[in-house]
Length: 118
Image 1 (cartoon, rainbow, N blue to C red):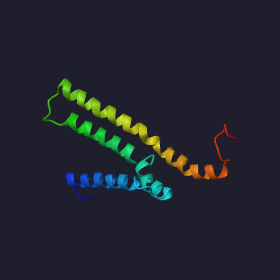
Image 2 (cartoon, rainbow, N blue to C red):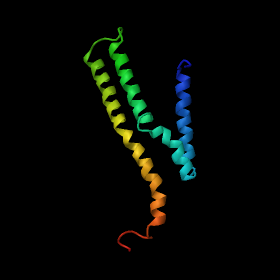
Image 3 (cartoon, one colour):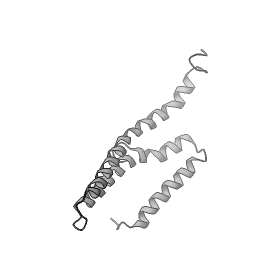
Image 4 (cartoon, rainbow, N blue to C red):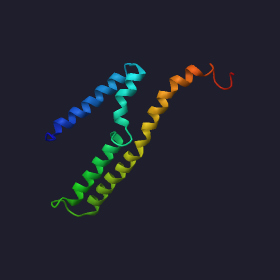
C-alpha cells in the first residue's frame, strides 16, 4: 500500500466533490446510483469507513504519550467517539439505494395520480 499523505486524502475529497458536481448535472439515474453505490455500501461504504477512521483517531489521541491526560483531552476523545457512532448509524443509507432503484418500476406499473386521485 502506498504511503498516505494529506495530498492523497485531498485527492479523495476532491473526487467526492467531483461526484457531487456531476450529480448536480442531472445524470442518468442508473448511472448516478451505480456511482454512489460503493459509497453507501452497508459494510465498506463511507459511513462505516469514516466511523472507523474517527474511532482510530480517538484511540491514537488517547494513547499518544506526549498528550496530557486532561479533562479537555478526554472530552475531545469522547466527541470523536460520539461522532463515530453517529456516522456508523448512517450505514442504513444503502437501503435508500434499493428503494430508489425500485421507484421507476413502481411508477411505471402504478396508476397515475396519488391515492386521493384514483
